[in-house]
Length: 88
Image 1 (cartoon, rainbow, N blue to C red):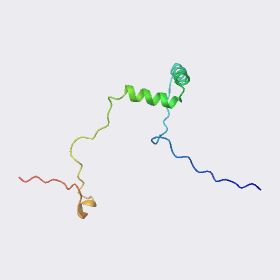
Image 2: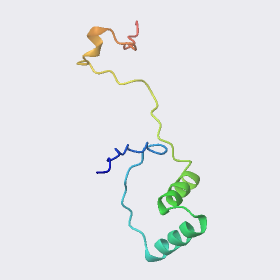
Image 3: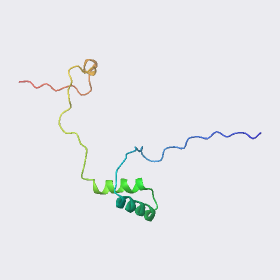
């Protein structure tokens, strides 16, 4: 009997990826397929490249002060960023 080798899971390449379903026209699917063949990469890489290049102006950013919730359990233990109270 031959010894069975254990297969180790290959490490994930690059950052984590998520699935998203998109609805595209037949022409867009044809163009995406043609670009995929021409650039020698998968369609997901083409879409990600297009998003990164053309939607770079859309940035997700939180501005303003931190939300302070009175019932926050961390406040009693000494929060690293306590709520600032103004002296009037």
